[in-house]
Structures are given as structure tokens and as C-alpha cells.
Image (cartoon, rainbow, N blue to C red; front, side, top):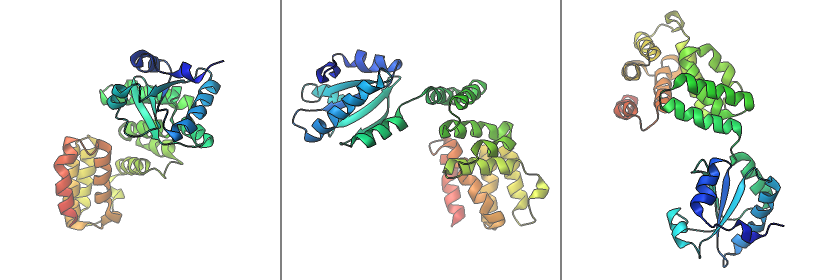
Length: 268
């Protein structure tokens, strides 16, 4: 029979960092004097035994391992950190009942589909687009309901097959990212005659043409001018497209930073 002491950390690098390359590792930072720790401890130990090797539990007594507690930014206990592939993928502080703990683990524990999606995201960041798309398609074969994989794949399909984006994201319109990706895809699929007459029609079309070439700076330049000329045009399409482009690129992207102030000024 496994006892609580057998979960105690011996070598953090080996027990957690290295072990998490193979299976998720849940680290329970606790202390003897901590009442909530004593409440949640038996719960995570029970769930770890039930997991039967699908994930591993490691307990770290912060009184006996103050350096580890400091290294991992532990300011309050109990603190549970979920490691996978050597990194913290989620954490929770404070005690919770068994039902909530089970639900949290179900949501946060990585699966094959989630792992494939993580790998795909890294490939896409590195510019390996075809490999990334292949991984995402494989992830959705494993779990077709995985929203993150659908969002990432739809983000790539915008450019190669915008007509497939709506099908990919059907049922996910409650996610802001999905709405913006569908907006970009729908706009790129339009022809010039699909845009009604208006003072900013040509500028919006110029922005769409630049977007098709992934000339984000050119697209933003034209769309921001369109906002200044006729903001209400097509239910403020130019404004919505600019925001969608910013979110697609990310707030930290150099193009987003370069045009954010121009956009804000155009609105007012």
C-alpha cells in the first residue's frame, strides 16, 4: 500500500522536471502546520492512486524545502502546480473539495490531442506551417472538440482555405478568437462587388487586398484611414477588422504596437 510519505519529493529535477517529460506531474506544496493542506492532501493522494500512472503526484513540504518553495514562487499554501514537459501548465492555490479537484484535473491534464496541439503551436511559431497544420489535424482526429486546436487550425486556414473556417469553428462562436477569425475569413472570401457603395469602400477593399498578401501593415494603414473617413461603414467593418488583426498578431507584435496608437486616435 502506498503511503503519503512515498509521494514526498526526493530529487525535484528527477521526480518532477524529468518525470514530466513522460507523464504529467502534480506538485503539492504543503506544510504540517497548514490546515487546508491537511484537508486537500488526502484528496490528491487518493486521486493519484486512482490515476494508476496516468499522472504522478509529488509532495513538497515547504518547511523542509524552503529553497524549492522560493524558486517556484510559493507565497501561500496549499499550492498545486501541474507540470508537463518540464513546464508548469496550470496551478491552483487553496483547498477545494474532491468534486472540484476532479473537475480541475479533467480540464487541465494534458491528453494526446492537447500535446499534439502544443507541439503544433511551437511549429507554427517557428514558421513550420505545413508540419504545424498536420499536427493540428491529427489532434482533432484524437479529440474533435478541442477548441484550441480548432482555433489554431482555423487561423491558418484563413489564408489557404477561408471557406473551411466557418465549418471548423461552427459551434464555437462563444469564443472571441473564433468570432474574429471567422470575420477575417469571411472578409477575405468577398469580392469587390460584395462591398456596398460608400465613402470608405475603396480603402476597405485596399485593406482586404493587402490582408490577402499578409501585408498586415498595409492592411492596417488602409483600414485606419477608412475608419477616419466613414467609421459606420458596413457595421464598422474596418474597426472590427483592425481589432481582429491586432489579436491575430498578438498585442506584443511590432506591427500591433506600431499601429495601436494610430487606431486609437482614429476612433476619437
